[in-house]
Length: 190
Image (tube, rainbow, N blue to C red; front, side, top):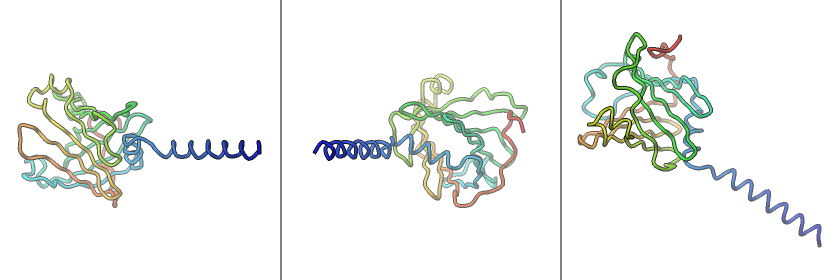
């Protein structure tokens, strides 16, 4: 009887541990989905209208260039312009998105490192980033901005909604076909 009882407790413990391991929070699942693309580059297109003038007729590429345990850097290249890098940082219960903007000589733009932190664990395939106080201080008109990023087996989208504007911005990248990685972002070592 003792052996059966002990075996039952042992089996219950193993099944409980298995369930606990499978139940990762949504932000950690999102993080794992993002890191699967490390080192890969993908072509994108503007989905929203109107297309910003500096994006019209330009090749759009995202390159998941750097993946550390708690940081993923994704340059967003528009034509020959390599000034933009999305920086995702994993926190204990959330993910932060910052926008690193550089000049061609590698120096930081006056408007850089703006963004926000997800207010909760979000979804495994979607994270929201409302503008943080640093953004509000740096760009007062952007205090109401909300960015969101979605990822599926086939697409990655970067989205921006300005509360002051009725039109969101959406860029969609095709994750089913890799493209040649662009040159390093401005300010990075080749």
